[in-house]
Image (cartoon, rainbow, N blue to C red; front, side):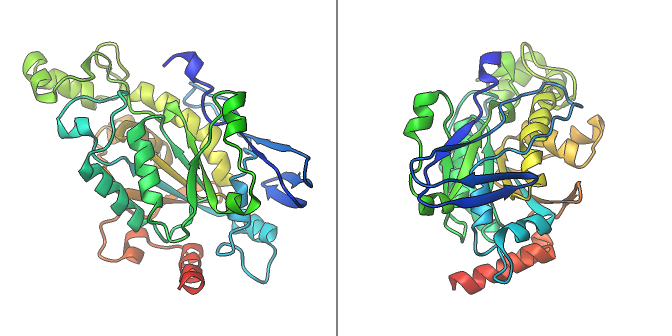
Length: 342
């Protein structure tokens, strides 16, 4: 990917408010001022190719409003800021996109931008049903349509009925034209950040080739080596190690600070970019990660608490609570959903 793409992740959402509102994110405080005063809350735009480097900065996005103002997340006897500050726990949902048209045709897809099949759409909707009772304050996807479709379709099933909105920071006009001028609408929205760093591994000269025909041409062992080794790339493509460098660096720089600030995050991405992130979350070795398989459209849940990631399972149990092993906070969220929406 060219460096020109490095800073294309979403940057700024401008809010126009009719009344003063105070927003607390981590150690950062922002006040939205009265009408005609414009406040910018900006995403950091850094990218890093260093696998081990950490550069933390809390992103002061309007996404904070989705959790700060959410009556389901805020106990009635406490102020919203106090609730956010004391929660010290955040949910992280990982979803591999549903089946794409090239998955169906058994073609190497990589970074080619291919949409979902009908089955992929159904998988995305089913994934949404599985996470419909888990809070989501912010969504990250790759820059590829199959991941974005998965995120959007999944959120149509969420019981809070908030609307996922892709943020646009390509240029000043894009920012201005995509402004939201209703405070109430902002409260009912979820920011979606599309980032190329979460794209699928780039398969180089294999992209668009039939997998079986490629195995017949180059040999099954060679193709298996390209697909399943950690540090051997296909011709003019990325190895899993190279994919991990960009995906994990982005996770550390842009996503982990959101979790630290108390936001609940969903990531809709791809097999190899998600394997890379799971390698970081679960502290897997390069040998362990190459045997990790992720099914399309199946959500995985992690809890971030006290600086640690704890996997709460993937959907294989017969009941929802068994699937996700709810923490007390998630169980309370589910209970309040029932009380508020029923």
